[in-house]
Image 1: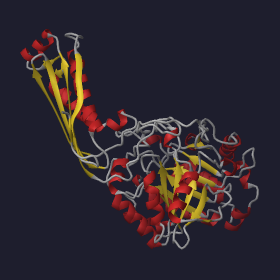
Image 2 (image 1 turned 30 degrees about the horizontal axis):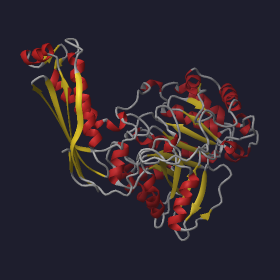
Image 3 (image 1 turned 30 degrees about the vertical axis):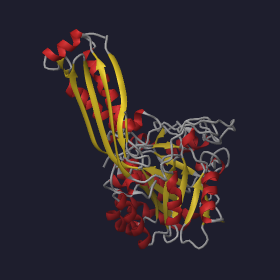
Image 4 (image 1 turned 90 degrees about the vertical axis):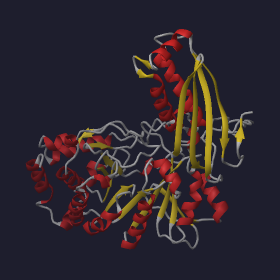
Length: 512
């Protein structure tokens, strides 16, 4: 194993002269993990991997993200060594995260190894997972010492789940939740990131879920981070959610929050489970933060929103001793700021705006995504047309050269481009809902002095597919322009419009 000799040496130094009772009782240990604001950090989150088996729309692009090379990630021994080091300094709770930690094959070995640290003061081992591949590993994880589960689930609607995650597996997640409660985990939490116009209509379903299920559903305010294109109009403040819930379920019981808890806890009277709000944006909890993070490549982060990192992996592999590593860890902790910076923490009052535009908020004048929560799932279909007018020489080249250019078959490439564009509409048009499309048919043909395009798009969903059809036609015609512009740039794209749609409350429609 990489750097096994230095790691074994570090293990012996940490615990060889320490009896379990003495390990728990040492009052000097938290000093390295205390920042300049007096916050003692006894909660460590360790990322096991950057990989994930979902592609959630608010988290990462469909094609995934660049990954750190495998040899740069922490090994099993390195993870356990760092965990022991932090436990020796007063950490009582460790949570394993990702990416998606269940994709790591040594997950059970890591949990089993950490379970041995409970004799030295560790009290809880948890995991944050999407639950897709959890069920088959859950009994072994429970036996290995895992006692706390956080399962990420943003909707209780199977169709919406596939749209938001770009993957199937909804039934697996629900089965994992039920199995966890049956096994007797002391804590089973469901984390739901709430986004206005996307899944805020699911909040009531989650509250109802706690009636018969002893779980803790936590609604998380949508936060900005690298690459998720955060917008303020997607944020639903917790007080707004609380008001909605109490309008439906009546007054909630306010529960006692733990001193370092990130959650404002409530319960519907008589329900088995509870709900909570993680108010990172509108009512931050930085003043009681007790968390430190280690990334999958072994860097310590003292704040989720901080950019400063110190590589503990490199120190391990260079054979640094305990005191030397603690010196750098302590220096990093002491640099932790009073609160996270660079993100808006509250709404600013604005004038009232009046608008008949469905994608404009009349209260703020800002753009918004239309809620489709009350719409029925129906068969939706739309057809859009358009054409690109060509000068005679360009038309002749396409006709005489079998529709080929230096970049390939013009109409075939344009057809593929149109299909890809239809699937990417929600990424190109900011306020469009992501949809699972059943059929995309893009046809192009030469006609007199032009190339005509007709696109048909179909799906089963709560909103129409007119934008997908228009996007397919537009991009297909733009592709024709791109492939023919070496011949002439005097081309005009014209006549793009929806000519037919069906499905939804308004029923069928045709351009007449």
